[in-house]
Amino acid sequence: MDKLFLLEERLKDKGIRLTKQRSNILKVLIDAKRPISAQEIFNRLDNKDSKLRLSTVYRNLNRFEKEGFLKSVTLSDKEKWFELADRGHHHHLICIKCDDITPLDCPLKDFEDELKKETDYTILEHRMNMYGICPKCKISVEN
Amino acid sequence: MDKLFLLEERLKDKGIRLTKQRSNILKVLIDAKRPISAQEIFNRLDNKDSKLRLSTVYRNLNRFEKEGFLKSVTLSDKEKWFELADRGHHHHLICIKCDDITPLDCPLKDFEDELKKETDYTILEHRMNMYGICPKCKISVEN
DNA sequence: CTTAATGCAAACGGTTTGCAGCCCT
DNA sequence: AGGGCTGCAAACCGTTTGCATTAAG
Image (cartoon, rainbow over all chains, first blue to last red; front, side, top):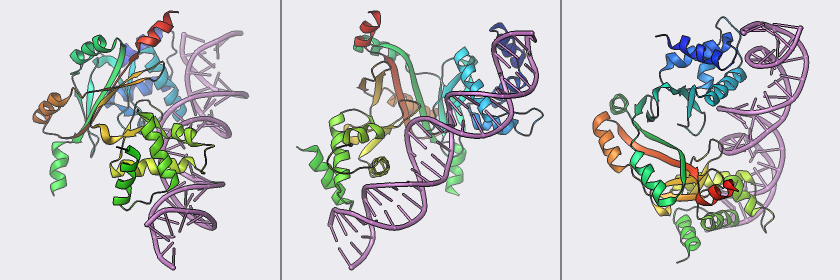
């Protein structure tokens, strides 16, 4: 099945207009297969056929997130990264040398349940990232 | 024992000059008993006896973190929060209504060990935050 | 005295916003 | 044709930086 087509259908269903810019942004997100920043999306689309401004990228990323198409991740202290929400809840392992990203299953289900009981909080969300050096970068550091 | 005195001694031991500004910043961090932003530190010290600039707060927070006195936490997408490093490794549960913060023991030791084996990464660090609504705010929402 | 630390102001980088005009539907 | 969306430029906000002055040791 064509991911882009499906996403575009969902846009239309919600009454969100299908512009060339939106379509292109979605394409980049699909191709990326990993979290990606607004700036990087912009870079990959700049000098392409249609005009595009960074502010448009931001506006649409925010819109898409609000509509549930995207999830944002805070992996660095600087920019937000965005990825398609179709892979379900998971976390990330990031190589601090090469920015390689590995998705991780969530190990926090039991912990969260326990926490609810202990604290009487309504738990809404959690975030977890692991940072390290990937096998490849370990080798290149040695050389 | 006096926390401030001990921290100031450690500053001197490292050859870091003990200024009035530094002393005041440390006081606020000690009193806070929770992560706190540069701006909030500045607010609590503004209009006090000695002069202070926000940039000085930032410079010292970064310095203190580098020296191992502080840990920074990314709880929101906006500002960094800082807390004393004397409590050892832990995480945070934040009420999104009132910003109340509860420290949490780390539940990720086993997961991290497993991850090292599975991925052959060198794991350097991880971050984890839980977000929810505290008991008090749940009640006030109902009213 | 020496030089690290601060005050001050300006820059920076990621993100948001207001407005006029464009182009989906 | 109408209103949502974009281009454009300017603002915004947390943070950093360069330089002259101050003050710690």
